[in-house]
Image (tube, rainbow, N blue to C red; front, side, top):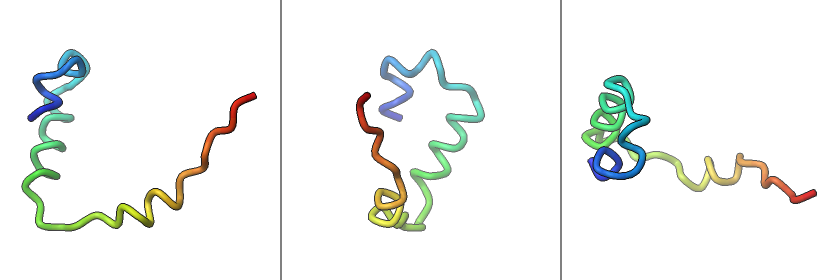
Length: 45
C-alpha cells in the first residue's frame, strides 16, 4: 500500500494493485538471495 500512496501511484493499474495485495498477503517466502545472485550487474560504459 505504500507504493499506492507514493510517486508511483499514477503508474499503478488495477492489475498492479491486485498483484501487490496478493504478494503482501501471501505466506510464501521469496528466495531473495537466489534472485539477487541471478541479476547481472550493469557496468558503466
